Each structure stands twice: as C-alpha cells, then as structure tokens.
Image (cartoon, rainbow, N blue to C red; front, side, top):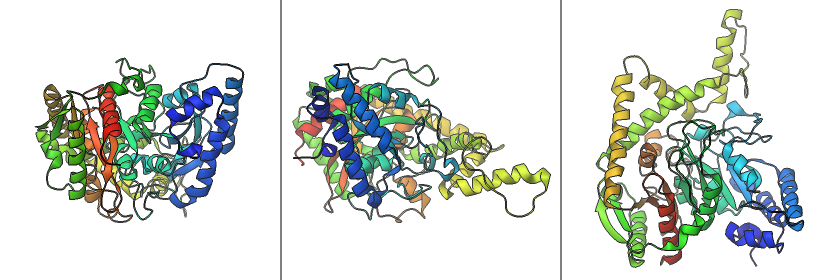
Length: 487
C-alpha cells in the first residue's frame, strides 16, 4: 500500500474529510519522508514540523466535530521561499534576507490557510528567482531527486524536487521567465504559470514585477487545477491583480479535446532542440490528435528576440526592485572591516551588505539592469526591448485567432549536469528559450511530463493558452495525461 506522501491530493481529500484518514497521519508521512530524503537533495530551506502537526490536528478535530473544512483540508503543501509566510523565515534563497521573518502572509498563503492546507515549509530556490538550475541558491544547491548529479531546474527547483521526491503533496512556485515550468519539466511533475494578474503578487518578493506570477505545482493535472482554484482570483492589495472571474477548474477538466485546434510553433521545433525531446513532443502531439484534436503549424516570428528582450527588461526591473536591500531595515547588515571615516560609514555599510549578501548572478543582473536604464542607453536598450515585447505579445494574439492552444517543448534539453552551465551565463539563459516568450506575452502555460529520454530523464511538454485561458490548457493537459500512450 502506498504511503500517504505518495498519493495525490484529490485521492486524499475525501479520505480525510470522511475521517478514514487523518490529516495528522498524512502530515507525519510527509515529514518522515523529508527527514529520510532531504539531506540528499536539499529541497527545503525551512521546515516547521511542530506548526504543521498542530495545524493538521486542528483540522482533524474540526472534522470530528462536524465542522465545514476548506478545499485543501489537511493537505501538506510546500511554499517557495520567495513568498512571505507569517512567522516562518523567508529568505528568497539569499543570504541578504537570512533571518527575515515576515509579520504577515502573502495573499496566496492566506488563501491556503483559509482552505485548511498544511504548510510544511519553504523550498529552495535560486536567489531572488535569478537562475535556471538552483545552483544560485545562497545556501546550498538543490539536486534533482531523479538523478542527483543533475539540476532540478530553477528557480522553483526546490518545489519541483520536493514533489518528485514525495516530500510534499502540493507546492507553490513562482514564475518570472520559466521558473515553474522548467523545473517541472526537469523533475517530471506538473507546473502551471497562470496569466499575469490571475494570481495575487501581494507578499511575493519582487524580482521582475511585470513578469512574476505565482502558480501551482503538483504531481498530476487534477491536483494542479485544485490548487489553482484556491489561489486564483482578484486581490485589492495587488494593483496588477485582474478582475477577470475564475472558474471551477477541476470541474471542467473532463470535457475532452474533441475538435480542439492545436498549434505547433515552427520556431519552437527548430535547430537547438534536442532530438530526444523532439521525439517525445511529436509523439505527444500524435496522442492528442488521436484524442480528437486538430493540429496545424503556426508562426511566432519574433521568438528569436525573446531572450535578449527578456534579459534587458527583467534585469532593469530587478535593478529597481533590489535597491531596497541596504542592510538598514531587515535582513543582513554587512560589517565593514578596518577603519572607516564617519562620513563614509553609511556607503561602506551598503557596499559590504550587498557584497556579502548578493550572489554573483544577482550582482550580474543588477549591473545589467542599471546599465540599460542609465542615461544615454535607455532608448537604445530598454525602450527598444519594450517595443519588441509588444511584437512578441502580438505574435501570440495572432496565433490564438487561428488555434485554441499551442503545444511546444518546455525546455530544449532534459536536466543538465550540475556545474555544466553555471560558468556560462549565456548557455544558462538559453535553457529558458521556450519559456520566456510566455512571460513576455503574459499568457498562461502548463508543463506536463510527456515521456522520457533514453537516459530515463523526463521530458516536459508545454501547453500554452490565450490570456485567462487556464481552463482550456488544463483541460487539454488532463486529456493528454489520461489518454497518452507513454507510461
């Protein structure tokens, strides 16, 4: 019999609510798995076993007393460390925020608590979301539980690894340029980046404010849909939160994809795509055709500008957002060494704090962003990149006039070796070549496993939808997951 930590939320929920299984027993299984496995993969930066068990026991008592419980009653969930949790250390994977304990919950965390989910702990990540491998963690790199010589992806690598290692039932990630979907692909789990504005960013530590979006991660599509239903919706505390109504995502999953028009972007299946990944994607597309979908080629001609556009705009936003980390208000305060004149003391404290607290990739992106915003370069870089972003967004709008969803690889390769790209930033950036255009356009996309390469590593397929098209991409993902020919 499977241990509770190996089961899906949609399998556990009716058992917990009926009293057949206790939330405490489920939580204990997850905590025991973390104790047994996490020293090997480092998926978590902070764990709260006592608080989690107390929460689970409270839910069990309420169920015994016949009280109504929330949509995720008793389900353990891991939260990416970029998301504020009241009373639980939140570092965004960076030494500069070591010891910071937020006095409030992010909106998504407050909604998890209202749904009676059991928050287990905070997951490892690249500092401030800056990375595609989790090697940029300010504490220790997270490893891929399927092959610990390889990366789990980034920046939400800890959330993906925790799911793949059965160290949680559900997880929250956050996606700025692929940070949910790329690790989901590398670890063989499901991850969804919602439409920009679909999920509140209040209480989420900012990296690129016009890109960042919190999203659900799970081991199957139904769990992903359930979690999205809890966290999605308007929030008056987030000025970028959309007023667009949400729907009952789990209830719409089983409608099938008969007649669904699927577009395959030629630019995503071109040179640079690993042959094994291509084979898995092509087989998955044939599976979707066999389920009644109609497939055709589409063009996203400005894709070739996506990486350069993204790294101009997101670093510019990072340069502004990370200016607040100065050692004065919270987190690390650097201590200058040697004698310093009084008039230089403040500047020296800033310099030491940022030198000690920020890692090399964070410093690189702050410098890039400051440069493109500087006098004389704004028009040449930032303004031009904003114009290119509009063209990329329009490519997607035209494609969705022709088809209902797009299908493409999530990543050009399977999980790469630890250390393979860490000293070559450009190669690392190119690992997100199929994910960053979606963030530039603000549209939703879900990554689901679609087979394995000959070496046994999972391959992820991306299903991309129009703005606020989460329902249709989840429906397509669910149909594929249930009907695929690959086990």
